[in-house]
Length: 106
Image (cartoon, rainbow, N blue to C red; front, side, top):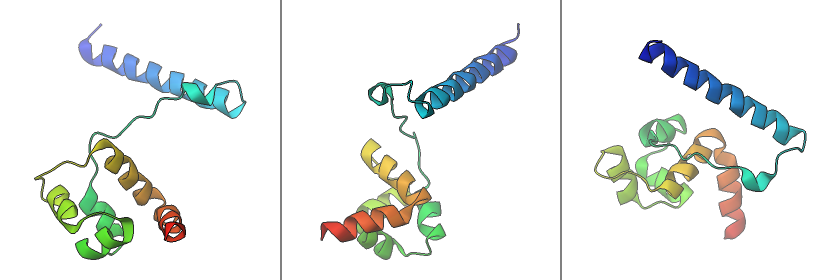
């Protein structure tokens, strides 16, 4: 079997296993404590910020980042830490949730 075909089989098996875990979790058969988060390796901060139509300053202020960190991430001088990458992915999908949580924290 070729390496490319073998890799496709491995990926397919991971997908099938993941779908099985989703089904088991949905049916209450999977212990939530056994779930392992998958932190994204990279996050496109610029795309997330631009999709929200915010300047770097407004994005930083709204979500609790320093302007310097946002600039460094966007210019590739620094990579967001794992916790920041997770937060950025939530902002990408559901910015209103983070805004709501931060509004209540004030």
